[in-house]
Amino acid sequence: MEFFIKVITQVWDVPIRLFHWLLVVAVVAAYVTATLGGNLMDWHGRIGSFILGLLVFRVCWGFLGTTHARFASFFPSVSRLRAYFKGRWQGVGHNPLGALSVFALLADLVALVGSGLFASDDIAYAGPFFILLNEDSIKDRVSGLHEQSFNVLLLLLALHLASIVYYRCIKKTNLITPMLTGNKVVPKSLATTVTGGSVFRLWIAVFISGGVVWLVWNVTPMIMPVSSPVAPITVPSF
Image 1: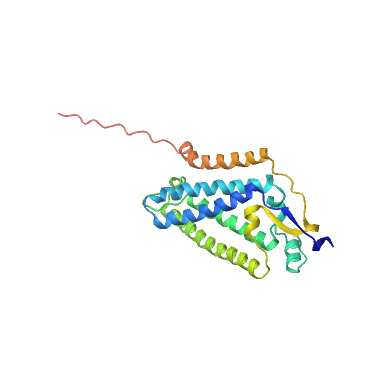
Image 2: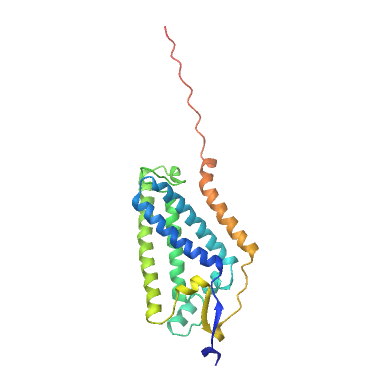
C-alpha cells in the first residue's frame, strides 16, 4: 500500500546540484571559447582547469558525499542492469541505465580534459604538459584525441537530453526539477534517509580538487630542468 502513497524526499544534495549546473555552464563556455579562438584560448585553458577541478571534486564526492551521490549507491552492476531491463529495479537516484550515462560522461570528460593538458593550437595556447611531449606525431595524436573526445561528448549530451525529453513526455517524470530543488516525489516505500556528506568531508573534497588543479599548472616547472643561460663568447680582436 505504501508504494501508492507519494512523499517528497531529498535525492540530490547541494554539492551535486552545484557540480551539475557549473559543469553545464563550463562546458558551454569551453565550447564557445574554443570556437571563437584567438585570445579566448587562454580562457579556454582556464575553463578546462575549472572543469578538471569539478571532475576531481565529483570523484571525491562519489565516496565522501551523501547517499545518492556515492558511486556505490548507483553503480550499474550486471544484477542492477538485469533488474532494470526486467522492470524490477526500484530506486530514487540514478537508475542503472542513467548510471551508465553518468559514468560514460565522466570518463569522456576525463579524456577530454586530460588530453587538453597536453594539447596545443599551435598559435595562442598550449596545455601545461605540452612541453613534456617531444615528438610532433605524439602531439598531433593528443590534439586529435582532444577533438575526438569532444565529438563523443556531443553524442553523449544529445542522448542525455533525449532521455530527459523521453522521461518528461512519455513517462511523465520530471528529471530537471529534482536537480534544481534536490527533492523528488517518490513512493513512500522507496523514501530513505539521506546520510553522509558532512561539511568536513565537503572541505576535504574541495581541498583535494583545488590541490590537483594547482599541481597541474605548477608541477611542470618543478620537474623540468631549468636551462642555464649560454655564456657569451668573446672573440678577441687582433
